[in-house]
Length: 216
Image (cartoon, rainbow, N blue to C red):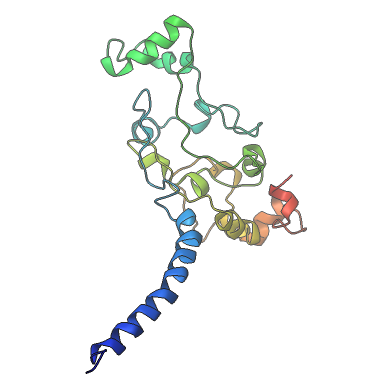
């Protein structure tokens, strides 16, 4: 009497393969999951107290980034607009719009709107907006085509690799100083060469991928 039939060999092979594949799958998941766009909330719409549209304000009305993000040129933080910045216009237009109720209440109560952060970096990462602006990095290099977003979302992964790709070869990502806030800018034949822009902005010759650049 045969204890094991012809299919036993196949079953044994499958079990052994499964036993080997399971640890590899777990390791792969452990390595890839934190780096996936899904886990990092890339392209996720974040609900805000007021559904602000960059597409309307930037592309439609032509409002400069610095109108709302006033400290982006001088501070590590780009800043968010205080309520009175919004009310500069909205005390005159859309004055009774239900959509802007939270803005009016914020002004009346003298209490800031609690905007939800979209782009987050770990506490152990040092990042300074003003340095990047001063060295010719345009807003959309990191934030994507914000001017086309009806509702703002995180456009880039902001992994360590994302930062290092630029720090290892910054030249092609730089632009003329008068185009930094131009969300429709594209490199043309008239654009200065990366080497010229690197010299113009005095980008340091030391490696920008040194650990101390971002981890201080």
